[in-house]
Image 1 (cartoon, rainbow, N blue to C red):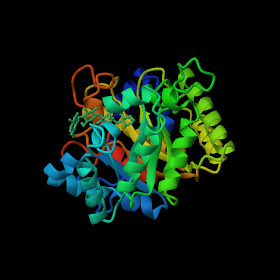
Image 2 (spheres, rainbow, N blue to C red):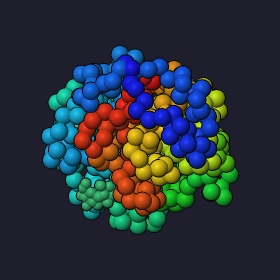
Image 3 (cartoon, rainbow, N blue to C red):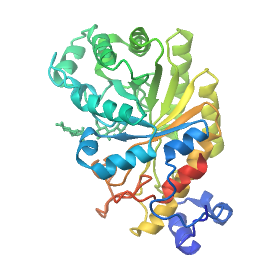
Image 4 (cartoon, rainbow, N blue to C red):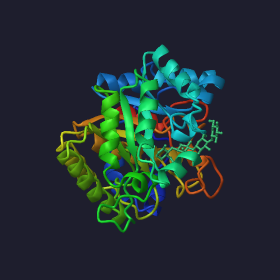
Length: 374
Ligand code: G3I
C-alpha cells in the first residue's frame, strides 16, 4: 500500500528533533516503503485478520458501555479485533464492590459480544494493588490469608471459556526498598512475597489449560527505572520458575511515550524479550498506546510521529518469536484512558491520538504501522 506522507519531512523531523527522537531520522523515514492512499474505510481486512494471517493475534481493550451504546464503535471492533479485554469490568472493584455481591453483567456482556463475533476475551486482572474494593483491602491488611484465593476462584469459575488471564498485575516497583523490588500492597501484607506464586497456583487449579500471565509496565525504555524493573522482572520470573509456579506468559503493557530524552533501544528491548522467552514463556504486548503529550498540536504531525514510534516498537517486539500477539489499550481515540488520567493528558487540552482509529473510526497512520509490522 502506498501512503503518501502529506507533510514535508522537515515538519516531521522538526517535531522529532524537538523530542530527541533522533533515531527516526531521514534514514528511517526515507526507508519507509511507500503505501497506497488507502481510503478511510481501508481494505476490508482488519488488524485481527492481518495479525492472524501472520501467525499472531491483535485485539483491544473495550468497555461494555461503548459496545452497548455505540453501534459504529461496535462495528469497528468486529472489523478490527480478534481478542477483547475488559478495560475495567473484570477488576475486583467492578465485580465485587461489596463482599459477596457480584456484578459480572458488564464483563459477561463483553464476553458474549466477543463470542458472538468469533473473538476470544482475555481476563484482566485478578491480583492488582489498584481497584481493590475497600472491604477487601481492609480484610487483606488484617492478614486475611484466604481472601485472594477465594477471589481468584470466584472470578475465574464464572468465566470458564476465558482461557487467557492476567493473573497478577504490576507487582514490581523500581522505587521499592526491598531487594526483590516487590511493590508494597495489601496482598504482600496478607501473604508475604509468595503471594505471587500462590496466585498462579490458585488460577491453575481453576483453569488447567488457560494461559496464565504476569502483566506489567515500565520496562520498555532506556531509563534507570525501566532497567531496574527489567532486572527485577527477570529475577521474579526466575524465582517463579524455580519454585514451579504455573506461569505461562508475560504481558508487557507498552504504554509508550514521546517525551524528550526517553530513548527506545530496539537491541536492548529485543535482548530483554529473549531473556523472558528463555524461561520458556510467551510474551504478549498487552496495553499498547502512545502518549503524545510533548508533540505539537497539529494532528498530521502527531499522527506520523506516533505511527513511527509504534512501528519501531512493534517491529522490535514481533522480531521475537515468543511474542504471541498485540492488544492496544482501546481501538479509537474516541475512548482512551489518556484523556482521563491527569498524569497522561495533554497540557493544551487537546484530545490524545494514541490509537489505530481516530474518533470517527477512520484508520490512522498508527493503524497502517501495525498492519505493516504484522
Ligand atoms: O467508577 C465508575 C463506575 O461506577 C462505573 O460503573 C463504571 C462504568 O464503566 O465506570 C467507573 O469509572 C471508571 C472506569 O475506569 C470506567 O471508565 C473508574 O472509576 C476508573 O477507575 C477506571 O479507570 C481504569 C483504570 O485502569 C483503573 O481501573 C481505566 O479505565 C483503565 O484504562 C485503566 O487501565 C489500566 C490497566 O488496567 C492496567 N495498566 C494500566 C492501565 C492504565 O491505567
